[in-house]
Structure formats: structure tokens, C-alpha cells
Image (cartoon, rainbow, N blue to C red):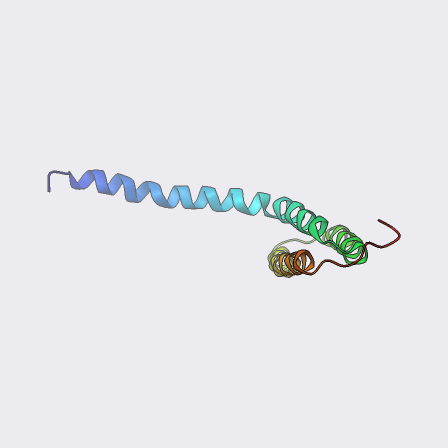
Length: 105
């Protein structure tokens, strides 16, 4: 091979730095991104009652979990990701089987 072994050494030493930096950036932005994603998915639900409940629940849960630190934050984010998956399923189902518009809409 015509490549110098020092070239590979530089690349492999640089990769952990990128991983650490990206992990720090992802950890810093995850709650905000998760919050906005949850709100976006909640707005896609067609039924007024489910939509308003989902929006209210997202907002109150994030206010309640505002002061979490350390491992509690990781647990709350994982629960939020599970809720996001559930909201995605619910919004796709509500679009497949639309209900009659309520008086509130």
C-alpha cells in the first residue's frame, strides 16, 4: 500500500475527538429537539380531544422535569423518546381513520 501508516494514526486519533464532541452537542440539544418533536407530532393528531391532551401533556411533563439532573435526565429523555414513538403511531392512525370534526374545531 502506498499510504503511510502515520496517516491512519492521525485519522484514528481524530475520530474519538469527533465522537466526544458530537455526543456533547447531542446531549445539550436533545431535550429541546425532543420537546419540539413531541409538539410537532401532537399537532398532527386529527382528533381535537387527543390533540389537546397530547399538547397539554407534553408541556406539563417538560415543566415538571425542568429541574432534573444527571441520570434522571437520561431516564426522562428515554421516556420522552418512547412517548414520541407512541405519538407518531397515534398520529398516523388518526390520519388513516379520521373522525368527525368536533364542535371545538
